[in-house]
Length: 170
Image (cartoon, rainbow, N blue to C red):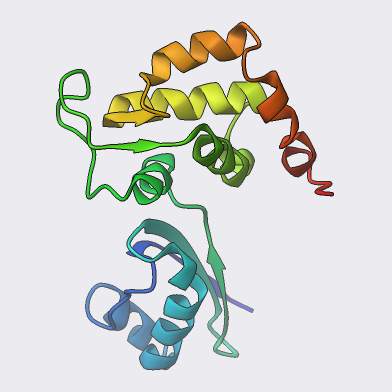
């Protein structure tokens, strides 16, 4: 039983059957239209964001499995802000604003790929990304929120999300 793995990065809900994916799927004798439709369906909730996708194919039986990864922190934050792309000059040019709740939700979404053990650490990491791409959070510089989080100013808000972070949402 020979398996082939295809790893691609796609725009959520907007995969086309053309190169490079189409020819690769054709070589494996898969129905290109069917696979593309399944990828688009599986990534529809990430419309407009770049998403990693893995297709595992059993070349003997032509059965395949599609696994959708998590979009980048940048993509998730830009979508929450409604921004087109990151700022080329985040210190002087802001591209949007998100709420602290948005940052916490992105932190929880990204948990599997973050090294943070605690929610606070994950939030500070996502705030770093927000700063780098030119976003403000609750109309403040993300760096100032990191300091305020370390001081415990947002403990009450963060505590509301701890169960969700731990995977035991109430």
